[in-house]
Image (cartoon, rainbow over all chains, first blue to last red):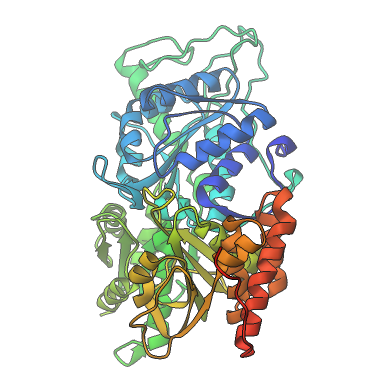
Length: 392
Length: 191
């Protein structure tokens, strides 16, 4: 279906990533946000709180992140599209409820504008240190969808996509920004509402009595209802059977948890969105995401401009940009590993996604991390040096 | 890829971020170029140090921060002390001449001063001195056309202040053009 025009600020704007994320949420249909504002994500909910009285919806400033991350799930079961916004310290507090959303298959979006950590760290400066936390932060087994924008325009476009994926797969989606992208102002084009595709909630067409809240459809995702529609339903974080009531047996656990994982894994092609640039015949593939992908592209241009050679042949280097780092593109990285010399993985952490690249490469190509503790972006020369090393 | 790197710096409350926003917006919305604006983000409030960076290009911009500026707009002595060193040898330094005393600038850097605060006061509102600086920047550097800058001013200020801000922009622009032409420029006497 098309976006509700009330939430779409059509036009060409000079806008920062935080504000663009808010506009993406509104265009994507979000009408509820609960938050405990924290730098550098505050501007997202600040804007939401000023826009939502006009658009029609609710923002609640909660007492803490635990409350924010569970309140939004209540709103979802009441029929709203909802999200919360935070940064590292708040993201840590939200982990339990991210697991709850995964277990109860509650479609919602968590925005994390990453700053330097651990703990309070660097409130106003960028990092990408929450990437593994986004994937593994809550306990137990589940699969995760995460997106990483690298510009204010993508903060708008991909926030809509995050909401759409959440609805399509009835799952929490992590929107992993970084302070640099969040506080960077660039041109943002917001199209007319009729050009924006929005995924509606998968409301069942079955009648009460003939419907089970956790009975999967063909795509392994169950349809939903919302409170007040006449269906009796039960939502619990305990292991449950298809009717939603606790069923704490080995059989129920295996059936439910395996499906929570396979509904993401088996639908990988519908979820994954990654960008390949000049990888045909490449010697080296730089794997990057978020703001670091732009710095890495500058490094790639430097390598080309300076005409570096290995064995009397110019080094050919391309980019694999992770737009959806989770689920991780194992097969594609494995295939690339079979025909390149090495991967270079710059990231604003001391080594997170590089481990995934190394794992997926399976020893067929070297993986050279370019770690950075955060606080600013990489010096492109550090990435250039790693590209030369990988091309040897 | 040729890029133009700009720093705007001064006190919080002088409209540093607004000036940077107008310049960035002018190029990417009214001239179909690309611009990236980042602000140094700290506990600044009125009176504290404040700075913003703008990168202008005909192509999409990759690296988000300035590495050496083609133009630096300095509106306080503290800003000058902190950022003068990053100006490229052939760069331009634009100062609020009543607030910045220039010393030890790299050889090759061209320095242009404007009494932006006094010009703004003459037009009735001291707070428009940032828009005077934007006009002056447009005239001296030519990085962005006056028309695009003026459109961006109109688009960025509260509606009831548009007329006054356009006058402030024009005052800075005319001052810059006259200065470049080698004319003796009459600055208003300090109040």
